[in-house]
Length: 106
Image (cartoon, rainbow, N blue to C red; front, side, top):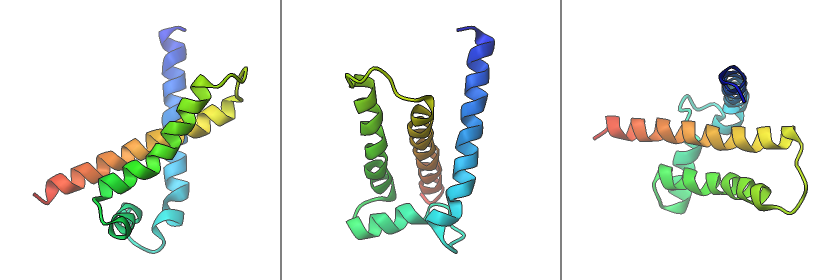
């Protein structure tokens, strides 16, 4: 794979991540202006930190990717890979936001 081909894949992935984050914002935050409210609510329900709540949610996606990588199935459609990879990356972006927000309160 050339550098140009890789850069195109990277740019397309970032675009998918952004589109997904924007389209899911209302679904996961309702009317709350806090983009991270779902993780804070999950943390309260589970009596843990928002970061731990997010990690638990993200684990499902990591396990799915791991299962796909080690599956005996010949191949998965690119759309399935895109979905799993995008979801996982978005959880990492959201984790970064949580960590940054927590750092601002110390």
